[in-house]
Image (cartoon, rainbow, N blue to C red; front, top):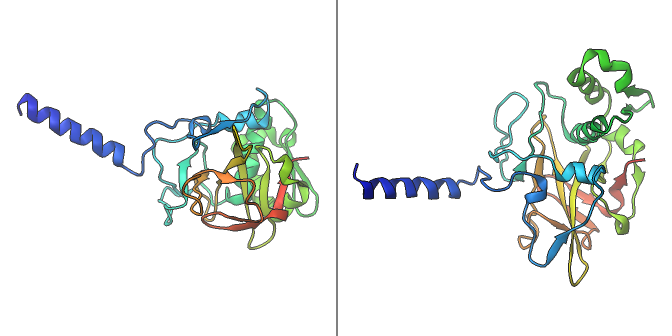
Length: 244
């Protein structure tokens, strides 16, 4: 192959890689997900849950995989995929993913980690530490869910929306998504936020697209909070919660 042919061949490969919808060539963390024009991220304290979430790494591959290694059937819901283990059991589903992120933050901060089931029985890291981190999480995921997590969390006003807050519908069926990041418009003051979820079966935690507003996608407007339509679930204003 001559030099000119090699150049065009390689250029074609380069363009193909940029156009591949299953790759994220530039975005590396939540903090590097681009903002719509005119917005800037809110300042957060370095050791806060908000800072932890903002620094979570993203996979280069945008494909969502199930716990068994198979691709999820619906590949249209996610904007990006978090570099967080899903485990090898069908356990880390919706509320479990929310608890996973909270637990990882608390562990990093050397703070107590406890989650309660529907009967208020607590499962604390300290009592299961000898079994290992993933076995402990598996116990939590097996015993706790959207119903129990909804009871643990506190109702939250949208005017004080913060990263780490949760939209949750307890029960069966139920669902939960977590607020990953926040930004505000420099002139209008409009607040926007990112959401992430796992789902059923257990799957990679992923940042959700906003299919209702392509101008903001993947961000959501906090001023449009009566109905929050995500790709796979619809939440309502009253379902916002925060950690105690």
